[in-house]
Amino acid sequence: MADTVDDLRAVLIETLELQDTPDEATFGADLLGCRPQLYSFRIIAIEGALKERFGITIDNEFGAAPFETTGSLTELFDAKRA
Image 1: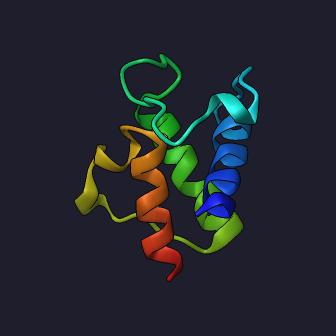
Image 2: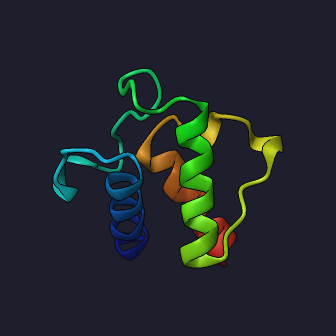
């Protein structure tokens, strides 16, 4: 799981153009509500980056739930990679 979190941290920081360091994007870090950058178009950008880098598609059926925390996104990411 550590590799997954590291992979996602890199995608989030790059895609959202965050000033965070990778250590600040912890497993339990909130993503929705606390970051004004994470609006619908940013979620779409993250989905695109995950698809481009890892071939992972996040279906619309999940809604915004996977994007609530770094941990929830990591869990879905791991499930999709398996």
